[in-house]
Image (tube, rainbow, N blue to C red; front, top):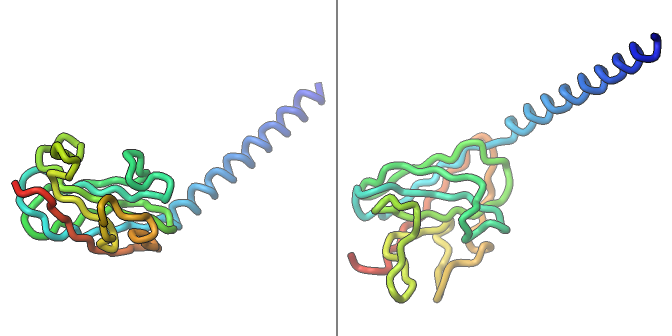
Length: 155
């Protein structure tokens, strides 16, 4: 009978140790998370929403950026805050989703029909910008940045 009790105690100690490690890991992860406040300038009108995505190098320009947020559009500037972004280097991509279909609409030539923008106002020369041009450092507790939407097609 001593063996099962010792096993049970050893197992509980391992589980308890794992839970303590997990709790410490979560506390550490939350302590290193930042809020990223993105001021999106040059919003054309109050239709739809302004969407932002905070992307790693691997997810940049794709649909699976790990941190996203949105705010109702209004002419001029809109500030969108993305919460709990781990400190690191990211690129921000944004667009004015005027029809709220959660897609960047394009014309027959492939040009965006809705306003688009990238952190650092990264240049778009015959296509989307490079990650290196849009990359910015995010640090706790708050990082602020501004980007400007560009509209390529007259509406």
